[in-house]
Length: 215
Image (cartoon, rainbow, N blue to C red):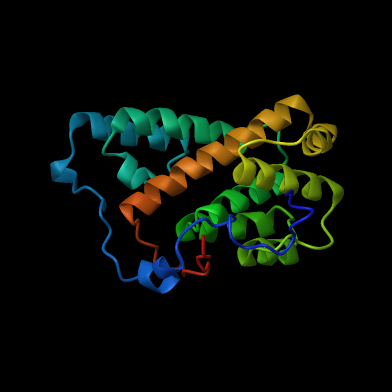
């Protein structure tokens, strides 16, 4: 069943048990919190310096805090992220929509808070953002939004993409764009899995806005 045939079906978008909902997320301790400076290895310090060079001085937070336990993985992962965020073939409005779809799939609250704001700033309509948060297929999407939304949901739900969804995405963003969309889904799914495993704490300015859906 394709997203067009199943526009209102919530299960499969988030793919996590309802018993592990957003309220409980706020009460569980962070398994992999920030490492005190005195406890860091030289490799971890080097990885932070590399991160700050790549990210123009941005602080280490979110998924990169638990990733610091594997400093070489952090270095390589964040370089992929820098490309996908700033130099990929996917326009910002569509890129942020793809990221939101990945965050919604994993019910990743930290990722959602960051990128819902970025999506709005990039021009993605609030109605589209709200529908993705609620697990609905947004109504009134632009043609390119509709094409990428259905492409992403097919890939996440079915582990494959139909000829029709592939052709539709290809027509809007080309081959490089299609591959970068797959890269975005994979990269932000990885970050979501890291944070869900670590139970990464939300920042004080964030809230757990996503409900977990039944499997």
